[in-house]
Image (cartoon, rainbow, N blue to C red; front, top):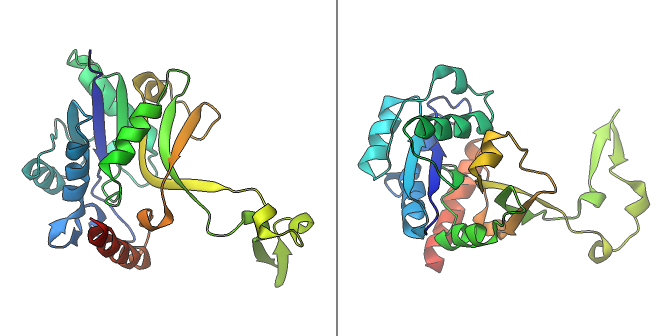
Length: 231
């Protein structure tokens, strides 16, 4: 029997640093359009919904083929609300409708560099002994060589590694901020994503861009053009 998998796109109205970030346009279409398109193209999901507190975003999401079965409550729509309560709210909504899902994927509207094959690989790798699979990418430079300024002086992250060759240093990764695929119970039980019971698929750096400010947005547009040329 085919698994039931729910995709949830969190897209609240407020965005402090980039106005209307979740519906800002690239190539004449709101980015949430591309997010919905990627999820649909993967053919993994029984249902694709947008969790939003905004009627304008809801209208756009419906136009491009996503469902908006509810407007998200205000208490989980502010800038301080983490991801888990938003996903848990969606799962519980459908449970009340007698509709249960085996897995649930949180997919951000800005994740337009994701490929459907990334989602398929994540789904394939989500075994029973894991809670989540997410996308991650390597740090550009070894974090052991990083430093900060303290009292106007350079402070190395770890002086023991100062003279080690970069190729001999451990490789570290960071969250690509694209998607988190987990079992429904993982979300309901508030299991942390970044623990030993989770795993990740590696995304190349040119397909990963966090969107926090206008500089990030400009970088995304550059990467998007590269993404298109590869297609």
